Image (tube, rainbow, N blue to C red; front, side, top):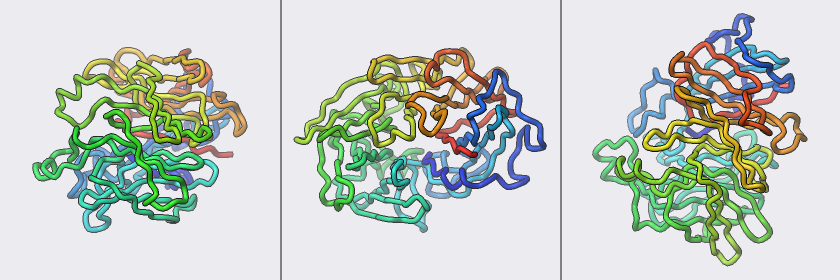
Length: 398
């Protein structure tokens, strides 16, 4: 689901909207000790299970959306609340018919220097996509068309200080799948080339340069940065996607790869880890900049791809640490929170929602980002089991 949480993060939940322990002054129960430096709101977006998808939406991810928030501060977990997020466009799902004919497919990427948000809108029947740029205040600053050869699913876009990178990979919109009411009207198309679109920021969409990669699919990049004249892209690579369900389940699990694009348009492809994973994250201060550490959700083997661990990659040392959540439990995307604005890249905490199937409850894990494989620093116990969610963010407060 596209995580447009910046506006939600700036607003205090309205009285009477949230539910959960802590709203009448009683703190949430905590195991361990919450760091005093953690002052802010952990926000996580999820579909509203009570909502109905509007006509024209193909998957149940659209439901108006709920934002679940946990307020931390002073070593206490003060409350858990949930609030309807209004209209939210999940990445990969079509826009509401009659209002906006586009499909806003890409997870947006935010430039940490300017606060600008970059995304890509695509159209099933038109030979172009649009590069959208929103200013930090939410106002549109640019809408530039980029020619493409087919309506490929582009759920991701990467931004470096000098470049925008598009992922034009062999998953295309399928009119036949749409007509039969498929939940996701996309199909793997081996005839469609696998390529990256490289565009210097500020240049027109007609200046995009296409470079080929091996056939695959990318749902979530970890990060991208400029390295001299090269562009480095760390991504979670699926060997194939949107094929027959049995065939997809038999494919190798997604893993972390690095693509390095040189000035001549050649791409060096290197697998960084053999651990099955998805939902990669990075220190937000390093987005679009050189990074050393990356985090992900370790997946179960076989057909069950549920999250079983929080992973930390040291991409210089080539090591992986894993916090395994144990039998009967699953975990979602981890968010890195620095100890201070000028703290080192891994000096802080990882926050992630974990679910306990036996107790039918959810909790927020607080892990030491330097040693995440160890026991949690603290566990915030929530009064309910949260619905399966997608992405999360941290909104600091004073």
